[in-house]
Image (cartoon, rainbow, N blue to C red; front, side, top):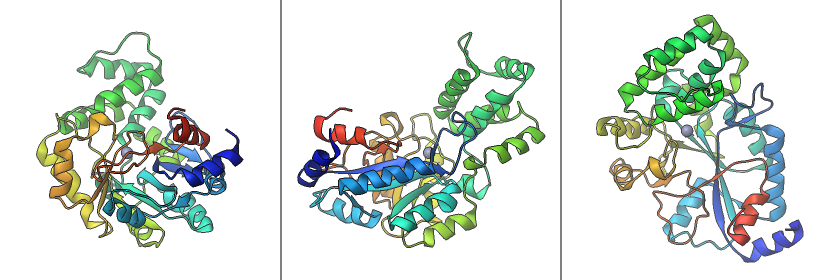
Length: 318
Ligand SMILES: [Zn+2]
């Protein structure tokens, strides 16, 4: 669809949506390892695109107000959110948003941040990419699951990341430790340096970000645990309680780690309410339509091009 026509139609067909991204980076060394980071130049292009389309860039507070009226919007809108809490949200993303005066939200995994760790998927991707053949064999011989034969290292890593996500916490920690041990401390030091995009915020940086008037800080668990049926309830309580000491007081928000239809349920929605959360965000793709449940608000994945969202807007498919 031609941009001019799209712009005109967008003005009359009011709709809103939430984007979820992760990091925004000036450059990437490896598009597989650093797959969660969108390039700065692409992100700026995307902002320009939505500016030309004439949608409102709304804040989390605006979104909260909308939720109070059943998400009935007077104008078309978008809200930007970023999961996990990467340091480049402060160093790269924030200066861009300041330049354009656009509010945004960051959902942080506060336990990982406090402990100075990285996301489990980062460790697994790196371990599989850089381990010696002998180390990989040791890993396979110790693992409790069967991998298909003939997988590439990336395919094996993706399989293990997915398997890890749905383990109960304690078993997951054992698997993660085994994966990390495939590489030496010296290798990890080198990889930390090389892939600095995957560095999370420090506690101080998180507070600095939270204090910024354009930024809303929301929760993304403590250790990024997924709300699946195998997860012990006390662990999920901890996932919801730990971030509260850092969050903006109003509204209190949560983004379900992983966030697909498998990763939240009526039970997790009830737990959100119990701990005082007012808005919950998933990664199920969709526009925020009238009557949407405030505890499972859909989000579109943030990708460099905006036009696929516009195709969905008018045709219902990409
Ligand atoms: Zn996440």
